[in-house]
Length: 122
Image 1: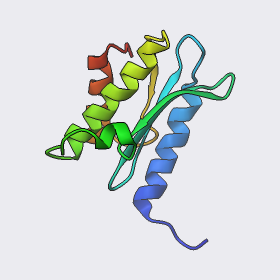
Image 2: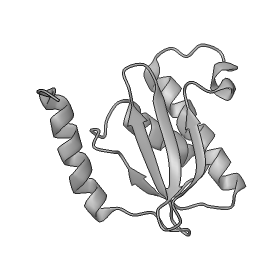
Image 3: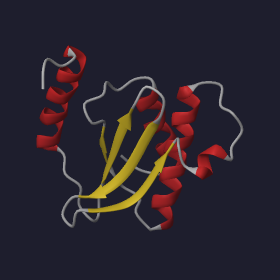
């Protein structure tokens, strides 16, 4: 496959290290975040059954109906609130946060704070 970007290699290394310790259960599923250069995605996963309980992203129609956001951090906070509301509607209040190897600052931190504002407990 050729050489990879060292930043991507470092993220995948962090991802492996984190995934060893984190697992989602039906009582406390895993809130997984993926951040691309343009968009942000969040999904809540029950690892025991392999099901996705809720998901939200910056490319879905519910997000696009909102007014334009000032920046990507504000957009990530809204995605966090969106996934938090969807999960609370299903009756799940506690989650385990999986930052997926990304550093906990900027958009990843904004998404988690948005989910906390919606009522999720980490």
